[in-house]
Length: 168
Image (tube, rainbow, N blue to C red; front, side, top):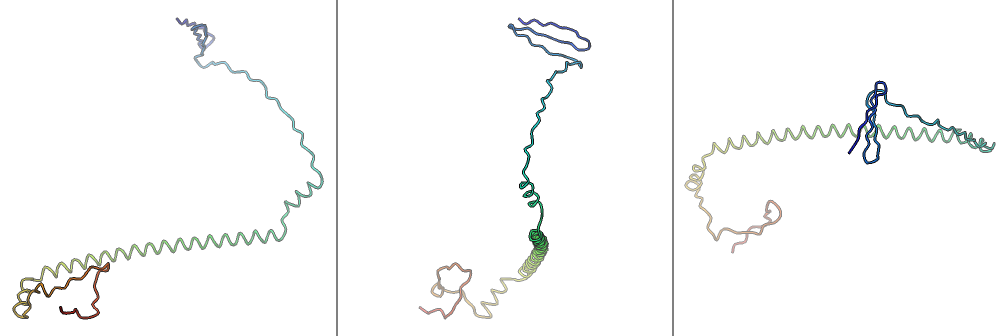
């Protein structure tokens, strides 16, 4: 079995537990031992000396000549111009989107008003009276089967009549 030993060292308690020839230890409390670390080794690097031509080339590379300054200025101007143009296009697109939304709202209102007027007109018409006037006063009759001509359906929504329908 396991054997537990307790040692008191000041304010902390040091517990050791032995189990199968292995010893485990842990410390409770606020007085935990500090780990001692080895001091870091400082290595000194030798900086290689640079030649005179290398120093001159570096100085020349850091200098900006007139052509380079003009190129950077032109690039900055073009970039600013493109940004301003992009922002104007975005603002224009937003305005057009708002206008489309407004026009769609007006169209919906007009459709609702139109449907309400149509329904009001249709409820005011007596279809039996229209049928009576058409048959008795105007002499209209229903078409017979030999008067009805059937055509094949096209993809369009309506039929254009260019000539008279031939009598069969």
